[in-house]
Image (cartoon, rainbow, N blue to C red):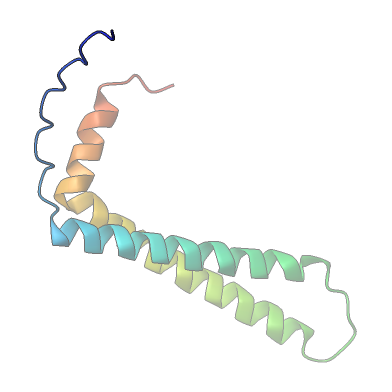
Length: 99
């Protein structure tokens, strides 16, 4: 009554996951999130025109936190690009022209 179902070829086993790569990706994601939050907190103080005495101290602290988070992000990005996954990403990017 119904035609036979097509036979599905067996799927190949997934490639093993390198724990070093996973750790580098997680560190990069955490550093990126912290940098994004610190930058947003710094920009939120842009329109703060209170006349309280601690205004510039809060602004300076936000700038320093943002710089520290940016430095952490740069080091995490360097560690990721030094990992095998970073090398694979660079090889994949090399296949496409850059504008």
